[in-house]
Image 1: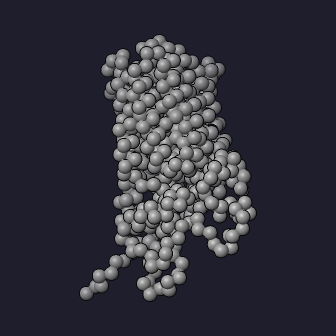
Image 2: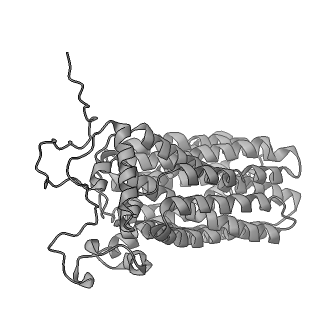
Image 3: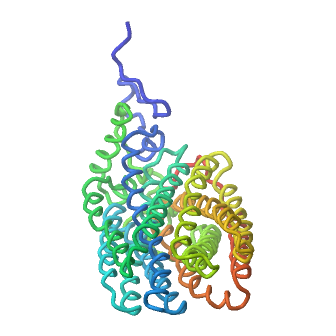
Length: 485
């Protein structure tokens, strides 16, 4: 006969005995979250954030198919359509930096929902565009919301994930991008070719995030670390207990502590305390300038380089991919079909990255996938010249596999680099710097094609990936560590 006593789930923090001294020190709320096993509640948070991520990818992916059709329907030249793509990325750059900082002030969940609403509505309105200029303006507004959502969502998921599998969970979040990209390729293949207004119907489908934002705001939890930084300790405790109950973990007997609680030794003036012990409220707490001091400068510069280079090659290649295939002599529908096949390779890329990131570590996984991207990009450039559909599709699939696997590792490592008071700001500014490259990338494609054709274009992308891999090796390895408070 067994005792009817709750047994903590594997990996859960040990629950102090009821007979423990009343003054016993309990683990902090964030420590309790870190040691929990992965539960259905974690899964719901992952899927809830991931669906928003997938809808983002749907929007970005649709743009490449819209540009390919508008080049035919509106007889627009590459230069004008490149500005449409770059306008969206300009909005992303601003949105990422502003959204990340706002999430450190207003909360992760609030900003996440707001950004979904902004870009969802703007995407629907862009379906009514009557000229390249009108589409350009609306794509900028879409970018504002889209750019802010991604770093905020990855920060939220990172702060709730169990410590020992945190990197893997964030890579799985990023894997939802592949689902959205595949959905975009299906819409591009099945919907856009149906009529000259197919691109309008595709953009209307991309407006779905506006409806999803309502669900996000009502159902998702707010970051415990953010709640503590704002003194909302009762709400933070309720959130932690909800996750513990989902794991079957009983409550500690000693009074719970906030991660930011000061010890008696920290009675010095605020400016004299170590950075991690300072109060988290106030404008200084989430200042972008702090990313380049407090011992964070090296990692900030390195991650900015990785983000810049990865964005440049990814958006330079994939925004123009259907158009480049059309110019290689393939019909529009066949080009969309090949793009779909290439996009499918993202899923195993994410799966491999999610498995390796907790075995090789963040730095090694990111560098290897970036080097693989460099080789695949070079092979794709020469494949496009040969005109071989097999070579194009296979090299394109390898590029998709390695590039998106690198993206998964990049989103996993970025929030880990910064303390709670700067985590949203750090992730947002890294993404914002990357978006500067995504603005320039579509604009560089037409002149590079004139200069040397597809081989030169993708050789440049390959070289940029190599630079990103070198910068990745300068990052600290944070596998298995706790998030800094």
